[in-house]
Amino acid sequence: MPAPERSEALRLAARARHDATVARAEAALEALQRQARPVNFAQLAKAAGVSRYWLYRQPGLRQKIECLRGEPSQKPPPSQGAQRAQRASANSLRQQLHVYREELARLRAENTALKEQLARQLGVARAASITRIP
Image (spheres, rainbow, N blue to C red):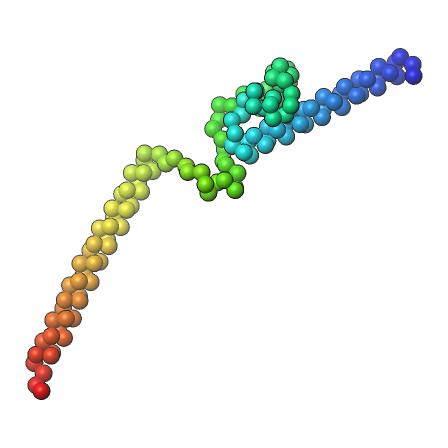
């Protein structure tokens, strides 16, 4: 094989290896996100089997990592979603407490009304039994 053909073959092989490595790193990045694991250069390098230095030299991947590493995990995977507790904000908790207090007040009023209704019915039944002539 002449030198120009050999160098072209080497160039194509290097390009294919690079593309495969980028694809592997992107797949590992998506896996980290799906698993709700922290996204940073060290974690991605470990997951993809590449060096951190290589990741820093890839502008597209570097930008994605820098954008994602400051964000909290978007959402846990569906299988673990029910198991993971989500923290509620203080305002959300106050709103829930307010709703529960309103419900409690409504139930107490209903309970009082039912007790009064029962007392009246028992009174009517007793009066009927007393006034009944044997």
